[in-house]
Length: 613
Image (cartoon, rainbow, N blue to C red):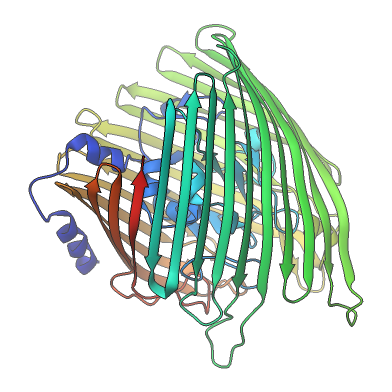
């Protein structure tokens, strides 16, 4: 660690004359911001300091500073307690030996079903009718990402058991015509192309983007390519009402190189098409505000072993927040979702084919949530949800907590929340299934403190948590899937940001997760340090990530990985509308893996140009 820290510091401290401080600070704003307004923690806009949940924010400038095509790897390290597995330069894949498993506080699953993915607040149920597909979350369309670190089932229902990742898409907010683009080329013939544009005039706004990424991969048979387009239209109907509609369509192909063991053979190839559309209408008055959102998510998957599926997930979310009297906000909401489809193997039964399932299920909920401000310092939050599922019946989900603003710069938070997950269609009806399964549930206890110093130029957040559950769905020998698993995790999460010195902007996160038994895709210790330094027309970025005790084997839970990664990037602002960049990943050439027997690449380079008009 001493050597890697010296490398980071030397990259940051290369000169004494910097970019103007306001430019440097706009490059990377901290996830720990006491004054930041978020929507994911309460469905309505609220200051982060007034909600008891632990919420992290990764903004557009942080996303743009990365060379990643997918938004999920960008969250690694920047959000304490969150980890995402990878298996190559880009591309997570699906089915056996797929990466992209998401874990928050040791709650995730393989495939991920215990962390809920949202796009603009609506759920992403994909894969085999229950879990998200990580390759679908393209960074070029993302404005910001809000992450609830802990259960949020009170607001979002099933799968928000370990946490919520809400991807908030871009929209055109300034008048006139604007355009962006980038071209990038890197190691292993990795290519990335993106063009986007926006237009706004009076009450109408439009944003559209298209991108294409491809790579040969760092191993034989690890190629990946994706092309996607996105369009978003906004209309300010009146002073109090606005509407928006968006549509996204992506097609991607990937190859599983197979484990890098002796005489191992390549795995399957995949060909996937995914898309979604949504329509929302918002109202915003002094005493009440709310949203009605309709969504439809669809996809078709082909795998070279013969698997073929069509799936769809559609529904509606409606909520309204009413301020009954000063300091009070009452939110009531209902949501309905129908998900399912058709899955088969076209090569089974000597080419005759075999249908695995052709069905769909509904999942509906109603909830109420009260936020009460007392004495200008104490904010109480409590609520309850009732969830009705087509198969297993009903489930009650309570939640409560408080945020106490001890001083202007100090906030104490405490909460107790239940998280739950409905069994997937695969678990109910396919492969080693059990139609009598009950929903999983956990109880999460957490308390934390947010503190700022020196006119908020130094900002800190420390959170401690305990997670318990004893009815997780696991495969029991000779019995199949049963509600027989348990979880007992506890740990701490720490975030810090400093722009105290006009030369340097530093960010630090650390998470420790103590587990009764190892949990796949969850490191015991995760440390991430990043910094930025500007010199005239140059900007230097560097980061160090330390992982200790990572379980990389989903089948045995006894494999532990420990490694350190160092990344760096230099950007040259040649013109007002153009900048060139050069980045190096894993510059210490560390040998590591986050998925057992899928060794990640050593040092890689990439460079390109970004344009902005």
